[in-house]
Length: 388
Image 1 (cartoon, rainbow, N blue to C red):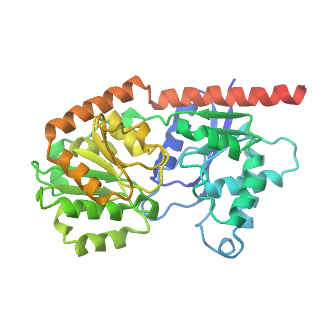
Image 2 (cartoon, rainbow, N blue to C red; image 1 turned 120 degrees about the horizontal axis):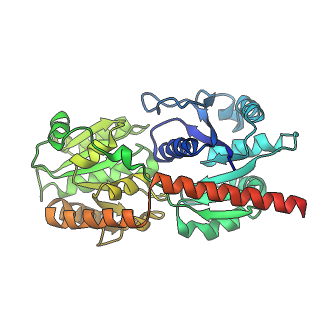
Image 3 (cartoon, rainbow, N blue to C red; image 1 turned 45 degrees about the vertical axis):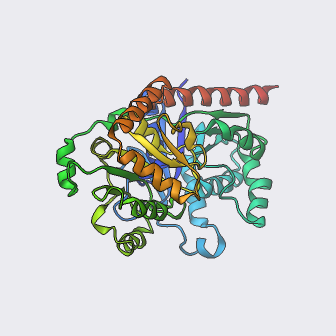
C-alpha cells in the first residue's frame, strides 16, 4: 500500500526538525510513496535546504502583514488548501505550532469530504509553546481536537499528547532516525581544523543548531568562559544561524573569549564537524530529542547537555555523556571541562554512545519503516471506524 504524504514544516531550513523531515521524505520516496514537501515560509538568508523534487512555499516570511496583525495570513491558508486539493494526500503530517494552526484552518474550510489523515509530528515538549489563556483555549478546544493521529520523538511525551489530542486514533512514539550517510566525513580532522583556524591539540566542544532564544547558547558561552582558566587552549565551535547571531558574537567578545570561539554560520558538513571535534554541547531550556544529539551518538561523540525535554533518552548520564540542570551554571562548566580535559573518558563515552545508537536501530531507514506502519495503522483504523 503506497501512501501519498504531504509534509508541512515552517521553513526549508537547516534546523533539526526540517532536516529530519527532508530525510524522512527522501527515504519514504525510495520506498515507493509519493511525497510533497510544503513550507509556510521561505528560508532565512543562507540557511535553506537544497530544493526537493516536489516542494511548495506558501508565504515569504512569518510576522508579515496581515499575519502580524491578525495572527493568520489568509493567503497562506488559501494556498495550502489549493496545494492539498491538487495533491490529494492520504496523510498530512505537520510539525510545529504555526503549521498545526494553518493546517487545522485549511482542513476546517475544506468541504470536499476527502480529508487526509491529520498527523501532528511532535518534535518538542508538548504544550510548552501553548502559553497564555487565549492560546491555550484555541489549541485545546479547536486545534488539538482536530488532529487524527500523533507521532512523537520521545516516549515520555505520549501520555501528554494523548491528553492534548483526544480524538487521535493512534499516538505513536517513533525515535528520530539518523541518516548515517550524512555523518560520513569528507575531509580529514586536520583539514577541518586548519579551515577553522583551530590547533590540532586544542580540545573542541561543538554546538550545532539554531541561534534561537530557547537554545540558550548564551548559557554555553558563559559556561565556557568560566572554565577557560582551567584549559586555556580549549575551543568552542558554534555552527548555525538565527536571529541571535550578532548578539552572541557580541557576548563572546564581552566575555573576553573571542579568540577561543569560532562562529561557523550555517553548515551542511555536520559529519566533518563531528569527526573533527571532541564533544557536543547542548544547553537548551526546552527540547524534544535533539537531532544533533542523535547524530553525535551515532558518530561516537561524548555529549554534555541540560536536562531539557527528553535529552536523557540520548545522553545517558555518566555513560554516553553528562547531564546537568538547566540553571546550574557551575555544574555545566564543570561537566564541559571535565570532559574537555579527559580524552580517555571522552573516548569511552563516545564508544558507548555509538553502541547505544546501533543497538537502538536509530537509523533513518528504521524511522521510515516505522512511519509506514504508523500511517497504515491509522488509515486502516479510520476506514474500519467509517464502515462500522
